[in-house]
Each structure stands twice: as C-alpha cells, then as structure tokens.
Amino acid sequence: MNDDYVYYVDCDPGIDDALALLYLLRTGVEVAAIGIVSGNVEVTVGAENTRRLLALAGRKDIPVSVGLHHPVVGEFWGGAPDVHGIDGFGGVELSVSDAVFDDLPSPARLIELAHRYGRKLRIIALGPLTNIAAAIRQEPSLPQMVDTITVMGGAYNSDGNVTAQAEANIYADPHAADQVLAALWRDLLLVPLDITTQHMLTAVDNQRLAGSTDPLVRRVSKMVEFYLNACRQKYGGAECPLHDPLAVALAIDAITLNDARQCRLSVDTSGAASRGRTVVSILDADAASGSRTRIALAAEPDFAPMLLKALDC
Image (cartoon, rainbow, N blue to C red; front, side, top):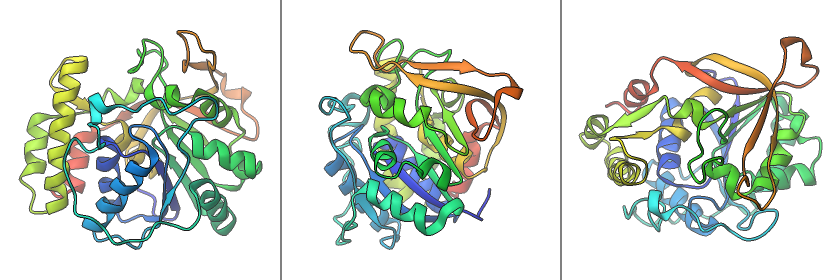
C-alpha cells in the first residue's frame, strides 16, 4: 500500500461501493473528498448513502460533494435496483447524519484538489464517468496534473453485466467514458469485469463480516447479503464479485497487478445494441509515449481474504 498520495473517490453507492469505501477507510490512506454521480442510484440518493456511511465510520471530516445526475447525452438510465435495491443499500438503513455536503459540485471539487495537490492526487472512479468528463471539459489539463486515475468499468474478453457487450458504469454514460478513457492521462488503469470477476466474496466470507464487533461492518454485511442474493438470481452462482473494492486495492497499490496491458481505449457511443462496449486495442510495449493507459487483467493474491483482514474479520 502506498500512503504517499491523497485520494479523490468518485462513486455511486451502491453496495460494492459501500464495501469499497469501508475498505479504503480502514487502510488509513488520506481521502481528500468523495464525489457522487448517478449510477447504481440517482445522485442525491448516493450522496445521502455516502454521508450516512461516513458518519457511522466516524469520518464526517471527509467532504462529500454532489455531482451530476444525467449523462452527457440523454437522461439517467434508471440505476440497478435489482442488484443494489431501490435505495442502493439493499434496504439496509443507516442513521441520519448531520454532516453538511460540500459546497462545491464534484467536478469543481476534483479540479480544486488537482490544483491543490498536483501529482500527489490519485483519482479512483467507481461509477459512471460523468463527473470526471465534466472536470476535463472545465480543466483540459487535468489528466496531466494528477498522478493516476483508476477506473472500475468495462469488459474486454468478458461478457458485460448490463448487456452482452456493456458493463454498467460504461453503459450508464458511454459518451463520458469515451472522453475519459481516450484522454492522455499520465497513468490510467482500467479495471474491467475480466479481473473483478476473478475476485469473489462468498456467503461464508459474509458470515465473518456479520460476526464483526464493528457495527458498520455488520451493517455492510446486511447489504452484502442482499447483493449475494441479487447476484444469485441475476447471474447464477453463490458468490458476488468485488468490483469496486478490487479497484480500490489496485489504486492504492495494496495488491499485486501481475497482468496489465498497455492499450488504447474507446467506447461505442451509438444507440445500437453495442452501446457502451469498451473497445480495447492492445499496444506493443514500444508504442507508449508520454502517457500510459493500461487494462488490468490479473492480480494476486485472492483479494477476499485481504479484504476481510483489513476489516478485522
């Protein structure tokens, strides 16, 4: 794990977002702000979920900024109530927080942080890329100002989880995803379904979360129970993928990335059946220039035991 950096998280909580945020808080890295975007739920619901989660974690000091609701083109896609519940947390209620939301919207906060921290800032994007794309439009030099961006999204040789070709974060705002993934970042790592579905949480794992002495971990275990049942009904199997927690682990260098390919990325923005398809062109090692764009395909060890250890389970 690298604690020399400051992190901005953009997310759409969401059960696996909640698990990812809880994991990130337990690692002890510095989180400068959390931005919220519409994705699994609409932005106001996601913002409230995050505010309550942070309050229960004793971290009301972390600013929560409210970002964009509608994608670059069109309207909010409706979210994923079948996977995360109508409220995003599988019907698990958290106590109301009196924390005040950030006075800056998420794109503006990200830009402010980039100017404040420069290459000490790392971005972790766990939801649709609407806020990040808006920030780039407002500050075109953003990709070269920060150290890295880690994006959970897309599918390469794997099937999508919304359509046969599209993963949810990319599908929800393909135009924003195309703008962000094609930008010349100093270092961009895409964490697609190909790798996140290699790291799964089981019902037995969740029993350990449920037995925690930490009330927040126990509440999140109730969310994960909903998530496990939803994944079983929607996809089959008795496990749920650790999409967002794995992306966080890779972003903070807590897990070894042993297969990452230099590539060029774009997204199908058509209104056809291929909407949201991630187009990946693998490059030769010599093709890279001043920027680095990679796709993560394998990491070790298995992340679930690492996650449980981090949460003292």
